[in-house]
Length: 159
Image (cartoon, rainbow, N blue to C red; front, side, top):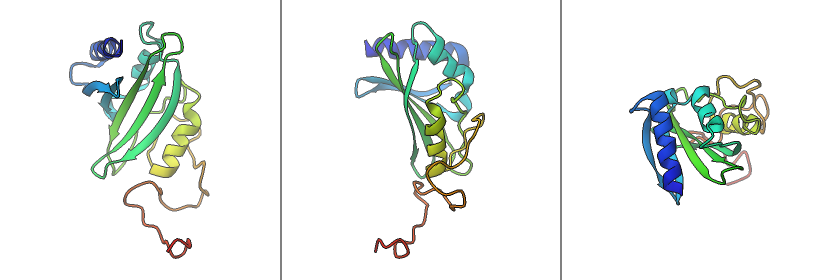
C-alpha cells in the first residue's frame, strides 16, 4: 500500500511541477517520503497533498527543522484520516537564508510548529500570519538548535 501511495504522490507532483521537482522519492521505514527543494514547495503543492481525493492528507502531525551544516531541511509528517495512510515531506533550503513557504493557511496545526522551527532554527516561513518567537524571549540572540550556535555553558551553569 505504501508504495502505491508513493507512486501516486510522485505522479501528481510531477504532473504539477515537472520531472525535476522531486529530488528523491522512496519508502522510509515503510512510509512514503519525498525530498523537494524549497523552490518546489509552495501552497499549490501543499494543497494538492491535502485536497486530492487519492491523497487526502488532512492532518499535519509534525513540522521540525534539521541542520545538516551544508543545508537545512523542514520535515513535515502528514496523515490522511480518511485513507489511513501517511507520508513525510522534506524541504531543503539554504543555511545562509533559510526559507520555506508557510502551510499555516492550509493546516492550522502548522501555526505553532512553524513558529517553533523559526525560533529554534531560524527558518523563515513566508506567508505565516504571525511568525515570531514562541519559546524564547523576543530579545534572544540566535537560534539554539543550529549547529553554528555558540553556547556559553559557564554562564548557563552547565560546565
